Image (cartoon, rainbow, N blue to C red):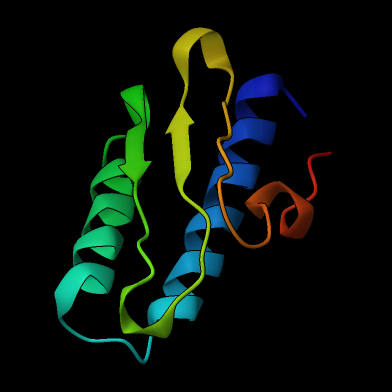
Length: 90
């Protein structure tokens, strides 16, 4: 598996995790955050998804930044469980 394929796999896992988390949350900041994930998902040539999850809606979730500069993903975790602990990198 190439580095690009590994990155794509980890990225897809992160998107799935957040989509599942917010599936029952409609409207407000949670929906805006998910729109950020989907926008990043659509732009695979140059992923630049940046999600800021607030404590609104009773959520205590991490902020996540995904970039693929030089074919690498960069994670930023501020609250809650880090995504990379859920989506193990190969």
